[in-house]
Image (cartoon, protein in one colour):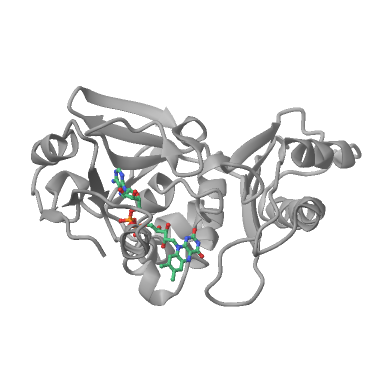
Length: 282
Ligand SMILES: Cc1cc2nc3c(=O)[nH]c(=O)nc-3n(C[C@H](O)[C@H](O)[C@H](O)COP(=O)(O)OP(=O)(O)OC[C@H]3O[C@@H](n4cnc5c(N)ncnc54)[C@H](O)[C@@H]3O)c2cc1C
């Protein structure tokens, strides 16, 4: 591993300054479960690393407000799986967090890191898309808020600019009677990255949203506001999912296998989401 400087700021303002270095060779560090892999194998060669874990404003807090749930940037995935509020109102997000890595990884890895790493196969992102989550970003020029759908641009690429930090992920409160479910396909049980992951959300009026991972350069969202997917035209809606996908062939699976399995996982998650919702077939 190449040598680098290490800084441990305690305020956001200090972190903005460190991360805004004009040479761009400074990386933020949260749990380090992605970053350290990159540092070790030489894929990432920063001049300095800025540890975010001791910044007060990024406290690992999961807080229910009147119309949303806010998850602080330093909240780790094990906190999500243990949260009563998330298990009750966002079960598919909890299901996605529960399959990331191992117990050790989930006690170290943050939700914000899973999103900021911008892997096409990041497991929590399809659920964040389906629940309509937003990302709160702060930087030297102030605060802005973008949807998760607009946050990830492509593999390892987000809208974050120099000095910017994700501070909170905000999930709107689902309508009463909403059901959602997550499923992923891996080569083996246990620690493995997804061949394909799907989160389906069905609201009480029959509107359906699918978040899909590992079948395109970034996780993406497909919506059906006409309630068609839960009616007899479901086949066409699944075709829309497949049409938006552009899976690659890699060590985990072939393009054709991934493409074929989209419909299988979409049907399974749709059935589970309907079961959990109060939507009734007309
Ligand atoms: C053995 C192993 C198994 C794994 N299995 C899975 C799996 O099954 N599914 C899966 O999805 N992932 C998996 N991962 C990947 C990893 O655990 C997740 O992506 C994790 O959530 C990253 O979070 P972190 O806090 O460790 O981020 P870090 O590694 O600290 O950072 C990741 C990236 O995000 C940036 N970053 C972090 N926080 C912020 C912030 N607040 N603002 C701006 N930028 C930020 C960093 O600069 C870096 O570029 C695995 C990793 C390992 C090592």
